[in-house]
Image (tube, rainbow, N blue to C red; front, side, top):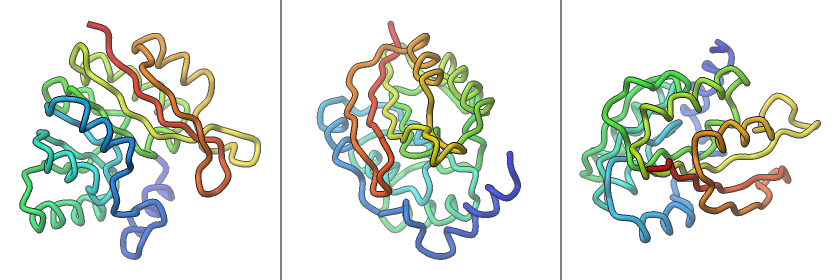
Length: 189
């Protein structure tokens, strides 16, 4: 892991990071409304907003982020909301042994910030992280020449397709004008 990336993300949580809106997106709320509660893993959970939303809807939730500052904020927010959620400091590409398989893996903006090698490891973790019939709900933006360092590629989508079945995809643009998408994948039973 890049030290400067780690430092940048940790320091960002001492102020108001632009990505931390404090509001769960409608795509997650729609997913919650149409699926029974189970076990969820929020990868790159930040300050815990979405993990707390899941817990408020009956999900057993573990949130993981590599920014210890974000995890401290998430734990405080969960206590204040009076919900039971577990928050851990961890590397998104090295979660294979985090616990029993999850019914939902949620990633809103983590995957596209990983290096190519980290993304490949992250996807391999699905073999042990996801329950059969489990879902991977992903919000991401795509790599382009202006943002060559971050974003997912066609190769990433191919790797995901080798392990999971695409249920739906909703393309759009993020607030910075980058091509983005919500994707929902299911692990075959």
